[in-house]
Image (cartoon, rainbow, N blue to C red; front, side, top):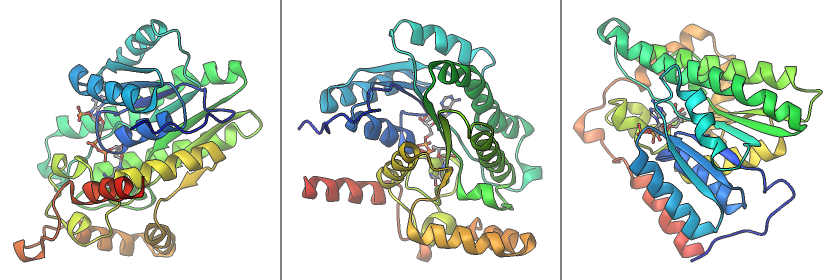
Length: 293
Ligand SMILES: NC(=O)c1ccc[n+]([C@@H]2O[C@H](COP(=O)([O-])OP(=O)(O)OC[C@H]3O[C@@H](n4cnc5c(N)ncnc54)[C@H](OP(=O)(O)O)[C@@H]3O)[C@@H](O)[C@H]2O)c1
């Protein structure tokens, strides 16, 4: 069934979205397409990103291009822009979404994994934004959405490097939003709490309090909130009422107390506390959408 919405004034702007083969990025890509934007999708595995692009073309009738890049590589952004030239599209919206996490005590995680996370979560965001912003400024319009996290507001023992990378993304986004305040370009930081995506199994965190005890949102809901905030030019968006309240209350707590709460959240839960599996929340949201359409 076609789900295309009537195009709005800025829905013709092509959106370049990283990490679009799964989770929040995949649903962001579908959300942009649903509003009529051509999409340029990036992820490491060509066959996976091709599949997402094909589904978007079939469901929403917008151009969807798919390019495989490992954004941790130094030349990836330049190679990506060479690939984008072949589409005849110029991105008017940049979505820096690709990212990963790794749970564990800092001194037990191999250095190469920390550095790999820093290259993707921080360095690739800086490189891609540096390459894209001049294009947006020259065209006199454009938007940037950076997927940070509520983790960016506070320290995260047992998830230390990840929290620090998201603090970078949040701070970077807010600074740019102010630098760009007198220009037609906006920057929005998307700060989700726990979301039902492959992030949790990849980070070895399915059996932690963060996935089993906290409120877990569907990636569809997060993508919808991110798109809406981006188009409204908001600086920071925390999807979900409970997350908003939590992010605010945590921000006024002393940092040592925030750190203690998060350490507890990242501890492993027992088998009797296991109440959800990866995919439960996402599938439920999918079923609700189908019932509503
Ligand atoms: N899930 C949460 O609870 C949560 C909460 C707050 C913020 N976030 C943030 O949301 C963003 C998206 O994560 P997600 O939850 O949607 O997880 P996800 O389903 O694992 O999606 C991550 C995406 O990034 C891609 N990616 C990984 N390494 C890459 C690389 N080297 N180069 C290019 N792309 C790469 C992945 O492709 P492959 O699958 O091929 O690796 C995938 O498309 C991340 O920045 C994450 O930190 C997640």
